[in-house]
Image (cartoon, rainbow, N blue to C red; front, side):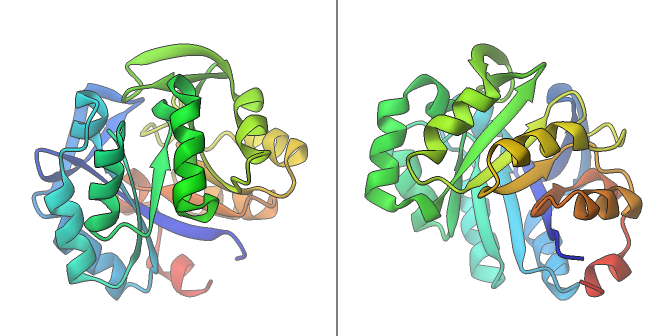
Amino acid sequence: MNCELIPAIDIIDGQCVRLTKGDYGQKTVYSSSPVEVAKNFERLGFRRLHVVDLDGAKSKHVVNTATLRAITEATSLVVDFGGGIKSDDDLRQAFDCGAAMVTIGSVAVTHPQLMEQWIATYGADSIILGADVRDGRLSINGWLEDSDTDVFDFIRHYNALGIRRVLCTDIAKDGTLAGPSIALYRQIMAAFPDLHLIASGGVSCDNDLLRLDEAGIPAVVFGKAFYEGRVTVKMKNER
């Protein structure tokens, strides 16, 4: 496989959880120790990790930085961190706690000048653009609010500023195990062939990963499918 496989840890109250379609009322707790989950991913041969502070996304400021620091100190995983990064202080905390990259979504929609300042200060390679999509429009603040911003216009703006990594989540698919939105990802890659697109949402099995790979998608984030034993370790080790 050429598609980069990136496991995800979503955190609420210091626990490893998954939501369904971003609904905080549909929460499944998979572990009380995100650090142990991260260490297991490293043992299995993964090199990257996507960490989401769901408390932070809802609170509009980072919350679970202690857990982030514990993960980065306990493993050598290259961690990107998102959720609740709304200010210079939030961003500094994420990097200070060991994040190699940050995922920014809401601020990029609501405060583009601040996002542009961060790109200039930290470099485009340190920032992943979070494009959380519902019916072609972006959702923000833990997917609790919908915007009028079109996903293609959004990516086009930041791609012109040097952003190459884009994490695109189809909210309708996230946590559903219903299969990824390959048609949407194909459209994005056709429009922006230089992107390192990271697909997210809906992965249910090894075949979904193969389909993303065959579609030429550079990377995929997955969580629930792994936690429920639907994605095999053999798939990862063959990469």
